[in-house]
Length: 314
Image 1 (cartoon, rainbow, N blue to C red):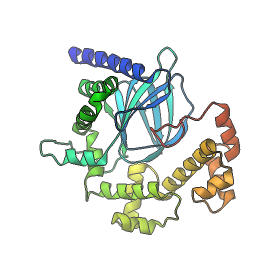
Image 2: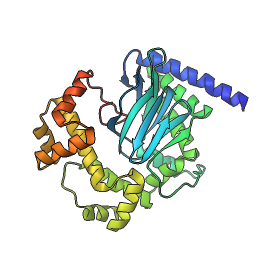
Image 3: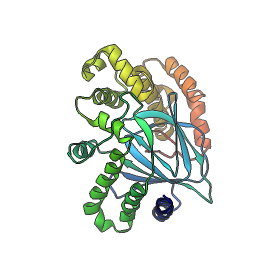
């Protein structure tokens, strides 16, 4: 056990070194390794709505809190975060400083690759709870850190990326699938499973959030009854389909106003609202301020930083 702990500390220090070397003073780096991004923050942040994509996030240093409905997840040097479907959340960095910045890597999950690994007979995934959120944390092991170090290390030898990145990505996902938290990922990726069918409904809303939506049509798409879909959708996302759609719309409207300079009415109609007054009420309730005052506050805090740990601004 002591040897294992020592190995984890050494690998974590190496991951800190490699992320720091690559990202420099930037807050975010979309790397040359497919689906891999690096993040750096030097101070704690206020709770901020965002949408987390299917991904694995490993903190080399620092700590972050994510709230999904009634569920709170803390991930840090000892725990990684896995998200299996797109989820609207509220997140904040709780440990970060100039002396010890928060450093993280995010690997977006390739659904095809996950299914490919699950199809292999030699990969055994532990059974898990049938009804649980599509987000959870897992223990950071020496094997996982080793794979992370080698993946980030490829940035120093870009000629190796085309051949080696896919191999290391497979290993990293394999490590996740072999842990207890891999069961939720398996359920969502497995064709025919109720979790997979619920995930199809989640994906449809994510891709069509601006369109009118009838829950009955969504249930037909998922091959479920309306009440069954509601039950599984809430278990997976901690919210109803209509609440999920509303949060996506509000977050996208904020992005349009902050990044593209849209006014509130234009942003409201662009994301599917038919009433500007309804948009103003719901935006104020969700973000705590009316739309344009919220945008002025965000701009005064500094330039917008897209956080592709989510689709929002962090």
